[in-house]
Structures are given as structure tokens and as C-alpha cells.
Image (cartoon, rainbow, N blue to C red; front, side, top):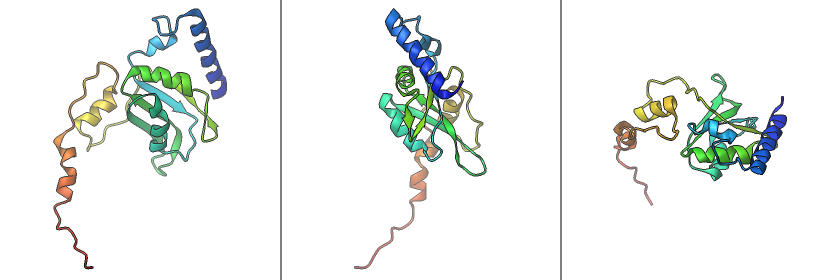
Length: 167
């Protein structure tokens, strides 16, 4: 089943929920994903950046993490991303409103992610980055405060004497 067919199927499912009165209740199909604030976005144009995706998808809520998968050798986008919202209710809005639309001339698929698997850790990740990668930012996840090493980075780098220009 291609992405357009899947998008139409979800649209039909949403319409049936609205007609039956099951929307926003325990009977809604969205209820299965109530503990995850992650969504999958597929079919993205390869020229789009994380900033582009953030700009478009932030209209439905505060985005706290964007994981756009890229080729390790070339750095080019693979055409899909995972987005974590601050609030799970934003995922419902994003899935219902963006699934099947055309973005940069391509139809995209937007769906919930029940069990997000974080990318592998890097040596320079702080506690906040590790927690976001491991647990995401779903409701009930307690995030540690940002470490002091990330906040003092800029002050350590700017201890040079400022350059003076002649007029």
C-alpha cells in the first residue's frame, strides 16, 4: 500500500470516528499512542532540512526533538524523520492534519510512533541528550536539567581579546 492510499485510509478512519462520536475518547485509534509524543514523517523532499521540518510542523505544537535520518557517508537526507512534541496532543493534530498533504511537491505520510527507538549514543552527549534519545519526551518523562558543560561552552571559547579596527 503506497503512502497516498495509507493517508486516505487514515482520513476515512478519522471521519468514521467523528461520525460515531468516538473522537477524543478512549475508543479513538489515537488512544493507543497516548504515551508517545513521537511521530513519523515519510516522503520528505531530500532537499528539506531539519529547520524546514521544524518550521512546518511547529504549527501544531512545541517541538523538542527532530531526528532526520541522513546517509552517514554523504550527509544527504533519507527522506524521513521522527519528531517529538512537548505534548502528546500535538501528535494527534499533526497526524490528522498533515497526513497526505503535499510538502515541497511531494505527498508526505505522517503517523504515530508507539515505541520510538533512539539513535546510538555518542561520547559527547550530555545527560539531557541521552535521556531524550532513550526515553523521548512523552508525558511522564522527567528530563534532567541541561549540564553546565553545554552552557559554559561559549564563554570558554570567547576569552580572546576583541579585535580593534582602525577608522
